[in-house]
Length: 65
Image (tube, rainbow, N blue to C red; front, side, top):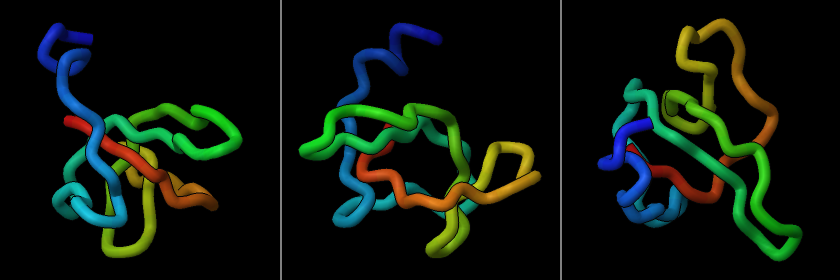
């Protein structure tokens, strides 16, 4: 991971979603803690693995490039 990626600020997916079709680093960060940190690609309301092989059964709360 480059230093640019590690210094980027996390953005909320509900107020500032990433562009459709762009692979971004995502995570869930809520009262239960931080989890499910992985690279995903958003297509409308669904989140897919970067190779589009499968979608995940949750919606990330945060993302960054």
